[in-house]
Picture 1 (cartoon, helix red, strand yellow):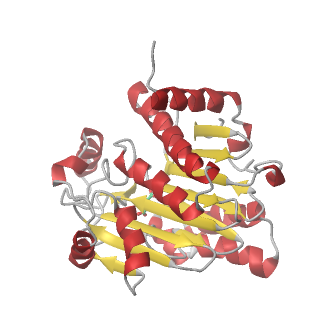
Picture 2 (cartoon, rainbow, N blue to C red):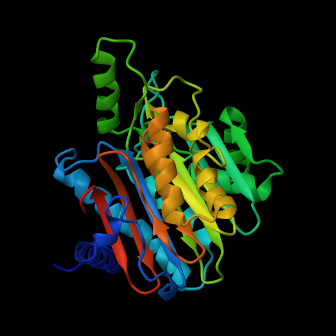
Picture 3 (cartoon, rainbow, N blue to C red):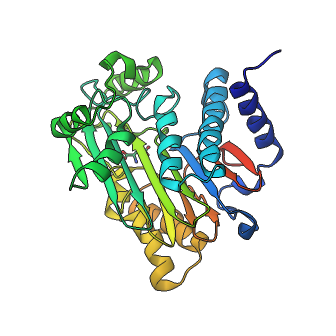
Length: 341
Ligand code: ASP
């Protein structure tokens, strides 16, 4: 079979991911000899009921291939001397375009069957940040978040104001149907049929995020989501909130996924990095405390990807699984979905 160069390299990544998966075990999240790497990129595709058999084989293969392609694209930027901000932007942009994840195309539906999208981005070296919340029609909310950061005096724009800004910034818009997928529509219908109007919004695995460190040692983080299936219109989760779903400083970068209300209340992403600064905890200790102790104690669930300035990686989750992957300058590439991968 003749593969296009792009597909061929994705296949190599998927193959490599089968060879080296140990570091992606839940909680066993050290990246090993961090000093060996002069750049690292980590992505997630959401935490939740990610178990073998949850997905149609095509969906599962598509998720793995698209995570690998996002890592490949971000890794190429970093390998060519590009910066971590561009790397996380590109990784998330690609995952937004994938119908397999709950961000951009493929986002979950609100209770009134719309797609309202949230995204944010942060640069660790300067603390610059941008976010959009509750936008519709914007093809890549992460590009809108980055435009807010770089081309406005603001940090967060919402709803129609954010859409107008994205239009002025020349970003692509798509018709509403472009965002729709059968799988997410069925998920909304299943909740509606579940008699109880009491059924809460359901955390829908598939939020996407990326953290990276470049050869200059600069960290960045980005997150994008459609939120939760059946969410009330206007609901905003943790993903576009700097400090809750996304954080990067000079020590540490975090992108979160899970039940956003709890991540907001725990100021989760910031708390992990603050614990490094104020308590001198290791990245893994800090991330595991917040994800495996603090948030569950509040009643929430989910996971994070976290990266420190030494290149250590931690990706704990307290859900059945979390789509995730990592690529490093030393050639290591891994993709995993389930707990025991
Ligand atoms: N954190 C996202 C939200 O609450 C959802 C998710 O990560 O699954 O909007």
